[in-house]
Length: 126
Image (cartoon, rainbow, N blue to C red; front, side):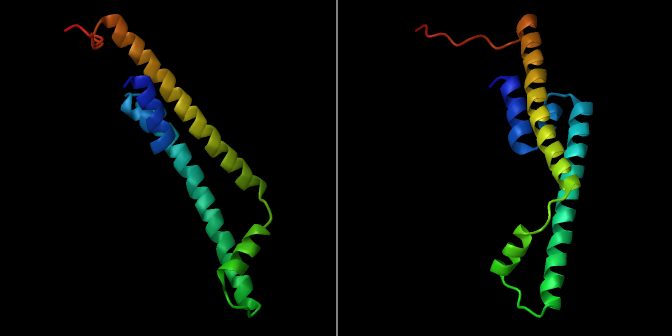
């Protein structure tokens, strides 16, 4: 498998920045990992706060806590502009991480091919 494809898949499917680390682009990889982790931490914290607020409101109203009522309350929760921006930043980082890993891998593929260290193509000679 080419480095460009493997780096892109690692960043897209495992975690943004992992492909860069595998390609030895450490600074970019660590920067992406830190940024994506901060975005995820913010989103999880905000979701936890909303869930606890809904549970407290349901408990103060004296209603029993059931999943259907909890989901209905969560779907009616107001959208937060900051949460939307953080979610967009997370998606953007994921896309940038994948594209950057692909381009960095492509550069390494070309360098390997130019230096002649690439594996020779398999032949069908018998």
